[in-house]
Length: 422
Ligand code: GDP
Ligand code: IMO
Ligand code: MG
Image (tube, rainbow, N blue to C red; front, side, top):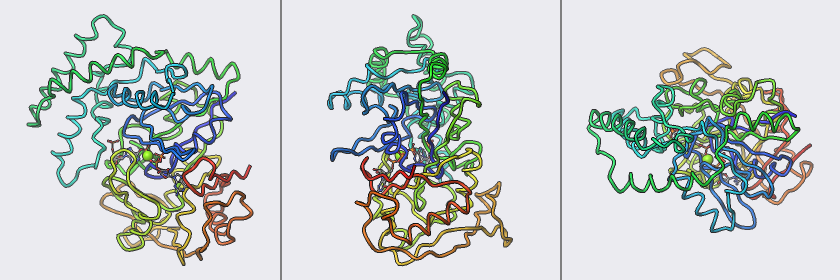
């Protein structure tokens, strides 16, 4: 059996959490492979909304094993809070969650270093979620990090102190306040929740699950345009958010990858700084934000909004090897008289279909084609055939441009508001 991957093709918040929850019944295992609590994955069912940050989005489905892979970075304090709120709903994650020993730990000082780095950057700041993601991955690649498995060591406190001392020096270089005793104490206490979990050498477990025929769905966080290598660098996150990241973040060989589900919004959003060619800084952008309720799931910040960007979509579909497109928030486009879609760029006055290397100084100028909108509410539509003909035309254009079938159309935030074509 192979492992399928579901990930975002834009700048994050495409609706990955919702779809993982919808598709989970078809799988035995759901595994997160990168990122950390910078993610906010929203699920809605039975009139209740849940936002998950570290815990995989299969947690609400019974008898599914959820795994936090080695590529994820974990803040024990946020993990504890997630655990506590799930317990209140009667979900005991200990029963069906495994955590990789190789996943790195986010310390309270990583969060402070994130803030210090952003302050230092001033106007050029990334707009980080300030969850300590960048500094934690820096310690990982700098070979200084602490991993979940280290909490089982008898000398964990010494190793922790050594890293805290290093961070204290860096913070004083930045002239940034030190970590408070209370914050450190709270963080240390929260480690006990992580200790109660099943800690595993997840690469062995996942490969053996694959070999025994179990169906595994890998859950991406962020989006491909935030990928550390292929995103709009430096306005990116610090992990590989693409399909290849699933191999690294779970320890599975490339040949084990099966289907790749590429999730995108019927328009575009971005939260934080960085280039956004099809951004709308006008009343239409405001309308998209209002109708789409475009405010960050993790930070509450308003999301920047704009039209669908096809060259960017084709680029990320290429890098990920997407086999199936899944379009979210189609309902938000109802009521617009006309819809614009970027189908090529102008870079330095020259037409181009490519994302340029330096998108920061050469923001591609979008060239648009226009589509007729549809006026009726589609949020209760439950078959592809009953969708408006204008939306069929919109979908056909996306399939033609990318050469990839569009198999899912989402028409609302609830589990049930999902049209699956095959
Ligand atoms: P993720 O990070 O990719 O899981 O996405 P987020 O949860 O951060 O953001 C997606 C938002 O859109 C959430 O508030 C979802 O409840 C909501 N959502 C998902 N699909 C749809 C849809 O088809 N229509 C509407 N109106 N909202 C949706
Ligand atoms: P999900 O999984 C949207 C953005 C931040 C910032 C940049 C770097 O919910 O789609 P970081 O904290 O990683 O150093 O921030 O990346 N960002 C996200 N934007 N959705 C996310 O996750 C994001 N995770 C990070 O806003 O611009
Ligand atoms: Mg999100």
